[in-house]
Image 1 (tube, rainbow, N blue to C red):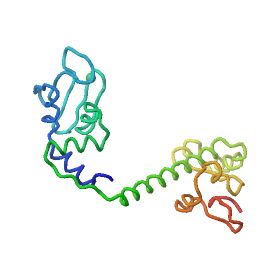
Image 2 (cartoon, rainbow, N blue to C red):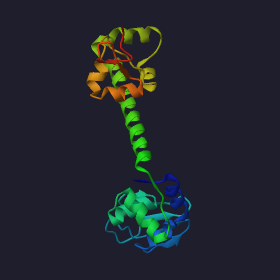
Image 3 (tube, rainbow, N blue to C red):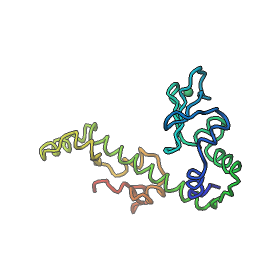
Image 4 (tube, protein in one colour):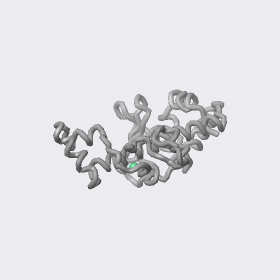
Length: 197
Ligand code: ZN
């Protein structure tokens, strides 16, 4: 179960961070800020600042900072969902919970994105460091592409191997297939899409 994103946004906009924090810390107005003694570290003069416009707090003493959800998480020792429920409860706001399926989809797409960025890093590191990528590095240099450019655009290089990525990433073939990074070859084995034939 997950809380609908629209609820989270609506709460963030409707709940006053000043009022919420004032339930825990005495704040006084100083210019555009509200200032008080930081609840996260011991201090005698107030370095804890809250600003209504940005809906954020920041302590110049210990560096604690965040929005109203983060504040409740920290002070009530709750996780993100717990903090939202806490705030919604106080505000009398009815939360909508999304179905398990929807959050599973989100988890899946997060997982795929994660695998993609691992693969980008993997191919990129091969290009930069693998001994057998020297030819590729020389080729790029000849074309006038420096290491800086390769790093900026995360250029990658696929080794002369048909399943190096699949083996190294240790990810199921289903996930590789879904990201387009791999497939099942005629011999029924996982094969990298970017492998050279
Ligand atoms: Zn502090």
